[in-house]
Length: 458
Image (cartoon, rainbow, N blue to C red; front, side):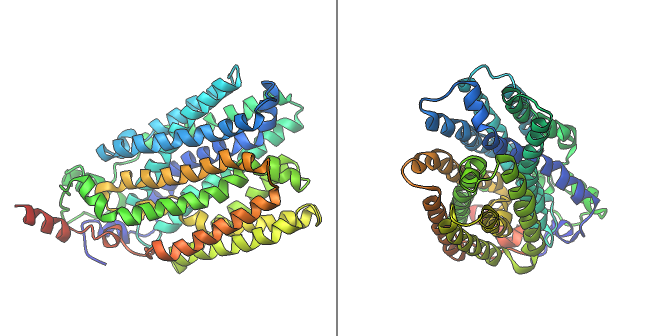
């Protein structure tokens, strides 16, 4: 590993600061999971409350897809803004999510709700860029994978599971369906507001301050604050034009975006329509499906992925997860409607588990985008990968109900299995191994490389 001004950050043992940073960033992702998964739970009562019968599939696509499209817009916008500072905009994301979540409870019609969810998505997209970027730039080398895996992927699943718990409590309390969905969607403001103050207090990352902000003194102060040791080595400011740096790393960035796209096609087909269409085909209630799917399989799978990601590496973990989840889907499809519901549910759970262990902990945590790009372009590169994921999720949101009208759930599962195998193959082609390497080493983002560029332009 090349020695650098950030070596003390890389070698700092996992500490209280890392735990606090993981909570501060993770609760925003918890909110993302809650907001994006809760709509799948309450689709039926929402449509019923507004009397949507004609073009129901089209409206379902808009309800489930509006936040996803909004998150792509938010990712692009805040990816560019974060080039001026990570911390400067940190907190705005959860503020937008909190306000939009609360407004959902008062939506007078389905079209206003769709518009609100689009705005909600802007906050989600901003968080998908800012949280992994900040988390990675503060992280130590040996624990970076598990830190992002838990703080992003696991917290997302816990948020999704919480939405089912809230709905279950309301159902048991005898709350009317119309009020249920309003409370479930509106409750998303609570976790978002819980970390608003903590986010504003999060220090700017030393890597941004030194490489992009050009303030080495502040960068050293942050390193000392985190590590308790003075930073003795100065870091050069990267004066290269961002588009020039991006062109050098474009293959890796777009590769990461493609893999997130593939993962989200498979993931969101289950997230958005699992509690309704897939659960119905297995004769399970939407609440039971969501609770078990995330509590037993998604969260547990992600935790196992976090335990393995820095040991066996990103490439093998993600490819293996894609393959094993595909095998589960191939087994699930022919048994659907023929085997006992408990059998099909556990096989489907195997898909959820292995998908969470592998691609969920790697691509789904936003890890690839931040690891495969230097500090000079990291927020922009992360925005590109987020947009890739949102395209995949939007394909699932809009295509799943339309395709299902002409096929069956079993056919869709086979299609998703094939998609997973494509993801496994592309992983070996597109993903270099980044485990236990510094961000500077991965991207040749060293002072020597920057100095060489500067001298060539002198």
